[in-house]
Image (cartoon, rainbow, N blue to C red; front, side, top):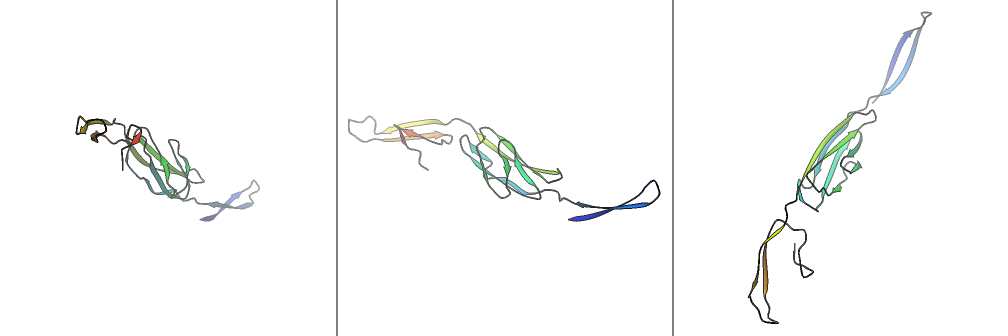
Length: 149
């Protein structure tokens, strides 16, 4: 919104003087939402932060930097992290919101590993089975991925 301010003052000679100044009222920055695609990830995974804001320029801390409203930004924290979105207007007034991502760093363990039948003769087939604790991001057996999805 644009407004005009009228200032009336008197000089030493008692002659009234008027000045007309323009000024603009700046709306307070508004944050509609600041969300993470996941509140908990495993080490090595990523999540998307999506800020939605108006009436200012946005920035997210922890290495993300300047952001555009409505755009998703991928992050891969290595520990529990709270991200702060700061939206600032032209006059320096700011508004903030936070989004937290917890990172599961528990090690993956193999609790059982069996072959059936066992033992086998040379050239005979066997079925390998295992039980995992945790959620691995990759698993290979003799260089071949066996994790599946």
